[in-house]
Length: 357
Image 1 (tube, rainbow, N blue to C red):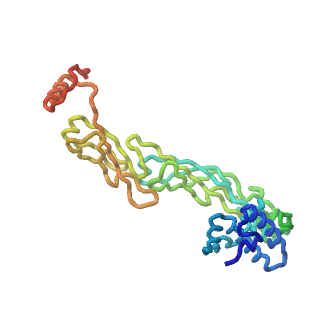
Image 2: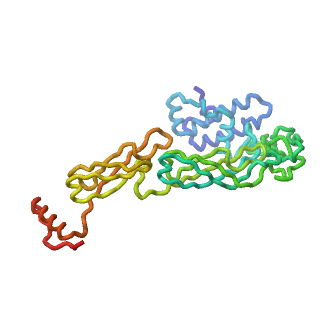
Image 3: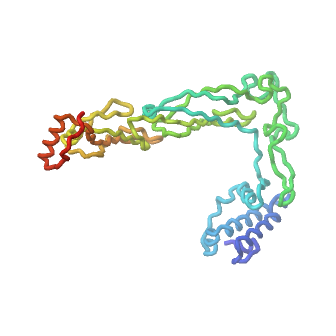
């Protein structure tokens, strides 16, 4: 196993700050940008970067000190990974191996749609309209006037990128960046389209049909890739984000795919049993047998009568919670019957008269 302490020139009891300081010094000396023309520079820099990544992390360092094998294969799979390390160390570094940005992508668009619970159960579609930049029909999106063609950029020679020398903490670094003339396209407009003035896009109202999947939750955000504003010529379009709002249904309380319906029955119905009609979210009501002696708060489960599970097979359940309604007003006949029941049941209700209905 490589001696990482020796690579960085520190002792095994070196502090984290000492390890960091040693790496900063060696990074300036060994980075390929500081050693132009040296084909072995990248390899040397990878070694000290790997040593730093192990010794600067307490868990990796402890494993290394114990002699454990450390898998570093995915740490620097590309030189961009090392540039990320340099960015943390030196702040904002972007040098060797950086990929130039191309034409700017289009901006994202965002709309909101509202659906009810029945539509959640079955899934539905909505047509939405929004303002966005769309490809110019006159020029086909390339920005050039009809009958003309784009010309090769004289600044980058059609490559779309240029190498620029700049000063960094590592010294003079050659960086690759998008061409400032053609903005990464490699070609330029010499005769702009009269409709879009060379932009390749114009603002317009866009109408899109959005598919709302069954089981969608309130607040779900759907993404339609490429349906946002058009980007610069050659750039990818933005995306459309659809925020789904579900209108509450007074008959049900939703818990993911499960629904709760609350209802009440009378004292006699709870004691003697009854049949009730229970609404469903997307079908006819269902008759539910309530057995004699049902207690307040009893719950009856109607399997698979809830909502579809979003992105999965199957449906949730419909839970029917039954309460017992205690009358607040009684007729003389009802009170007399209730007192007769209490006497037979050995109960001792208050002797006062209840308010009449």
